[in-house]
Image (cartoon, rainbow, N blue to C red; front, top):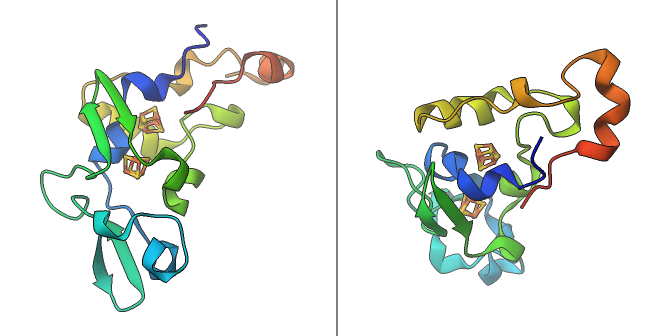
Length: 132
Ligand code: SF4
Ligand code: SF4
């Protein structure tokens, strides 16, 4: 298995789901996320701009989903992005990751993981995917 970060050639989740979070994660309320890249959903909830419309695409995403992408605010990204796991990370499937990838014609990641079966679980520490 390649140790190349699969997210680098994907970015599908950044252009598929609404990315919403507690409003105070934005930098105008003491958080890190650039407020100018967010929009209000409710008085207590914001989302990354571009992610609650169709077609969906986060305003912080650079590149072409399914080919090559980069988060331009990687170190300031909101909690949903920090918590979202690529399918197969930690040896567990993430249906949402694989669904977003499928939308862009990409195969599911989990089936390719070398620790897919219990017998291979011991190799997880050696082969886990490097996330962005
Ligand atoms: S978490 Fe999954 S859907 Fe998101 S960029 Fe990585 S591989 Fe693609
Ligand atoms: S903030 Fe970055 S990681 Fe989060 S959806 Fe936007 S581009 Fe993706």
